[in-house]
Image (spheres, rainbow, N blue to C red):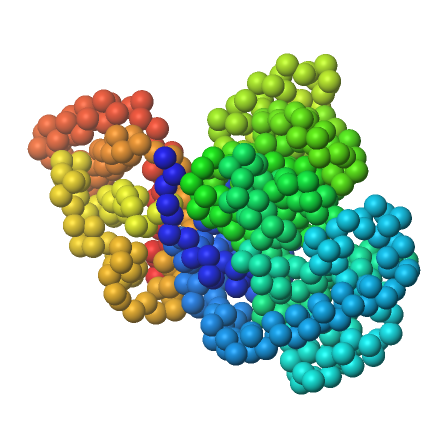
Amino acid sequence: MRIERAIDYEHLSLLERVLDLQPTSDQAEFKCLCPFHSETRPSFYVNFEKRVFYCFGCGVGGTLTRLLKLLKLQPQTEQVSEETKANIYDVLQAAQLFFRDQLRSNENAKRWLKEKGREHFRDRFGLGYAPSDPKALREALSNFPNELLIQSGLFGKSLYPVLRNRITIPIHDENGQLIGFAGRSIDDSEPKFLNTRNSVVFHKRLVLFGMNYALSLLEKNRGNEELWIVEGYFDAMHLLYNQLPAVALMGTALTPTQTHKIVARIHALKRSIAVVFGLDPDPAGLDAMINAALSLLTLQVPVRVVLLDRDPDEISAERLKSMPRLSITAAFVEYLIRRRPTPTSAAKLLLRLPDTIRKNVWALMNTKVKVFGTEYMRAIHKCFEDEKRRQPKRFLPNLRGDFWELVVAAAIDRVFDPKTDLDDIDVAAILPDRLKKVYQFAIGEKVQLSEDEEQLYAKLALSRPFIVSREILLNGIRKAYWHRRIREILDEFAKNPTHENAERLRPEYLKAKEEFEKLRGVDTDKLLNFAEFFDSMFSS
């Protein structure tokens, strides 16, 4: 059964325009390099379910609202009016008519399509041609204001067209609205592919080429139970032309917003549809494939991989249909064999796998020791354990859920003894003053947090504990309590080392020692780690 999570996708798509968000093991949480200080390894975390951010490097944190203010971003609804959007759509549509007309009259462009075997895509996908003359497009759109032309993404600030001497490929959103263009050079000048500029209606990190066509095929034909993800525009056109639902990544890695759009649309169809990765067989394609597949694993969508021997648009549709679909386990091991990443890189990828799949990967790798070599396998194992130890010790996974960790903090501060019925504890009553409003905010009460409290809330919400069962946690509390009580009794005797005082303290000491001995096997290291964390977290 799929569990719905209240993830703030509006903020996700907005922040993805300026932050290179990378997935973590939590589908609602992402990391990136901190935009507020210089660093080489990501320590900046954003959680779109808890709606908080925190940098474990420089300590800046708070709610997503505060992050938008710090980055000087505004929600899309405040950035541009619907009227402006409509005007931009008009500009793009006029440009599409111009490009189509130019293709009809340009022999070089038509020859290029024919020589590449792509002539049949021309009308099906609305291909056009952007002429070399930098004045031509501007003159064709002369009835639109210059500011609107720049806003459309077709022109730079100097009103110089972005696309020149290129086959134009119209890009639509998932609802079929024209939002931008890609251009393929016909003289093999670099870059081969170029997109119009990001605008208020188009951002290539947020859009998948061909989604509108793919959804139409999936909705019309229940025999289509796969959605292909490929690398290039013409790869996607090849599959779509042959009635295979497909989308293209448009030159970027699969982003969180793109992932969400795929998953949301698949779930809306209310039937089991597998995502099939068929990326180019070069090293970059293999890397993109494995990273993209891993990003979908936690979202309860079937993931399959087809390992290609050439680009998808060079393989017949019939052969693509019959090629073996590998599980992520088999594909991951095959990726290691073909790509042979460094042991450290392999270890980092293994850490992103869910536990069950990782176990299957290890098992399959063990059957291929001769292929990998014993030395390489050992190096991966060592790097995996090293990377595991380097993972930041983070606490409190969900402030809206279980608060046993806060009870531990209270126990450390001697708020109650082991006989206290923990089920009856009023959490707010035992918390340090600094944390009370944070707790109220976390459980949904309407309280106004100061900037420091926001930062503390974010730090808590983006921290994770060791996995500790309630019973182990309580036994740790009890052991810590009796150990502390023994020390207190001995300190009290040291202050007055008389026979009378020894006899008075003896029963209490024996009781504390007996209770402590019962718990001798209980590991309190985790409790001590909690103690250190809370001491640093709540100290003034």
